[in-house]
Length: 211
Ligand SMILES: [Zn+2]
Picture (cartoon, rainbow, N blue to C red):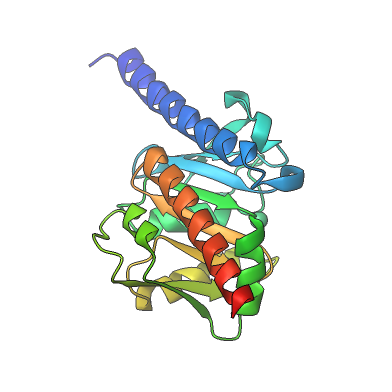
C-alpha cells in the first residue's frame, strides 16, 4: 500500500475521533456540565493514539481544531490539558474503553464530597441503571468509586487505576469535590453513560435530601 494511503487512513481516523470528541463536548456543554472551560473529552484512535480536547477550550463551542492527537503512553503533548493523564490511563488500562468524558455536574460534585469518606457511592434499584452497557435489570447495585482530589493528575491517574482494578465493573468514578469521569466503547456510549449518570446522581441527591 502506498504511504500516502496509510497517512490518509490514519488522518481520517483522527478526524472521526475528533468529531466524536466535539459531539461529546457539545452534548455536555448544552447541559451546562462543563462550566468555565472545565471538563474534557477524548476518543481512542487506535492502540497508540487518542484524540483529546486541548487545554483551555470552551467545550460548549469546541471545534475540531481544538482537539489534539495524544500518545496514550508517550510524552505529554504541549497543548494537552492537565487532566489528559486521567483519560490516557483509561485507554492504557482497558482495551474496551473507546471514549472518555469528564464533566463537572452539580449532583456529581456534591455527592462526591458527601460520600468521600466511604470511598464509594452505591447506586441501587434505579431503572436507568439499565442505560449502562451490560446491565439488564434495575435489581442491581453499581458501586461508583470516589477518589480524593489531587492537582498532580499523574499521581491521581495511578490511584484511580489501582482502585478500578479491585472495584466491580465500573462505568465511571467520582473525584471528591471535583466531578465525574465516564467512559464507554464509543463516543455514543460515553454520551449515553454521561446522561445516565447525571440522571441517577440527580435522583440520588434528591432522595438523600428527602431522607
Ligand atoms: Zn475537572
